[in-house]
Image (cartoon, rainbow over all chains, first blue to last red):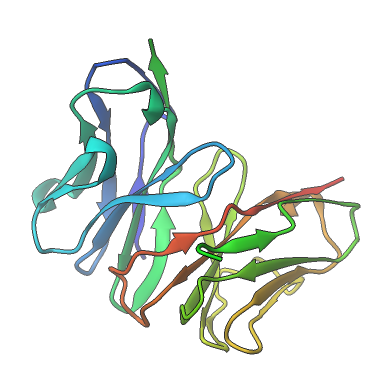
Length: 113
Length: 116
């Protein structure tokens, strides 16, 4: 079975500061990893995905994530937080033979002016 | 439409009532997924369709939950004899590929079901 763990449901960050959201995965087969963002009253939107082509993945809105197999991690970062980054962020995993997404519990990001 | 459309956006049901939730996927998308998102939790997989075939329904929590996609496009999730624990946001997602786990899934805004 695949799963991801996101710690700390609420994350507060000052405007202009580093955003770091942690995601650790568990998978017995090579994983495909995703970060989705959910703005209020909107559907989940793909930020970025890891598909084994490159370990450092760049996404939309200045976000990036690095796949580290040795640490079973796929942490999401953004160098400088913007007020518009306030949203809920979900890490998810899938694999061949199991193309459903298994989501973490999510991180609610609050940006402090 | 350009995206995945779900209706209704909000549904209040009395306990014991049957409900039907609709999903219009992106035109031409062959794969369709239903997820359930309880308050404060991440989405949990319910069921998966490839065109009209329901290939995986292992996530449906009970036999009160039923999903169909008879013509391979619009899908309906039906919940019979609703109970309070069914209160959640029900998300529909579609993707263009078959069996490709690295393909982006496009999500609708969801239907928020409240059972009173």
